[in-house]
Figure 1 (cartoon, rainbow, N blue to C red):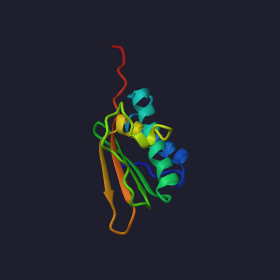
Figure 2: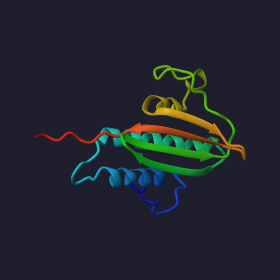
Figure 3: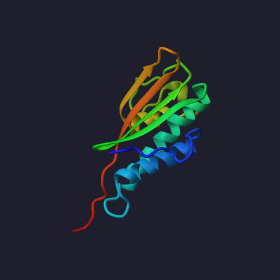
Length: 140
């Protein structure tokens, strides 16, 4: 299955969400076998948070990919910072540093699966996540 190329370059959270939605539509045809809306909402929230964090805290967005796989979408966001977010906490207890705001990373941890953070030899990092997307159950 071919992943659709973005209609416009992915440079903002809005363009990343639009591309992710297009990837979902290419894999889960809205007219014959649509994706569950709650799964798409989770995907779009995570995409927004990862891209926003790259823009605000990661020295800018260096790359974005959304790839359909058997049970969902794999998202990879590259930025220019070597700083890795703290990931060692449960979904119901954000780290103390985030208590006054900044709940984006805890949201990613809560909604995404298979979170992988890879520092790049040329600098920066790639955060990759898997988000399950299920087909909408239709009455028989």
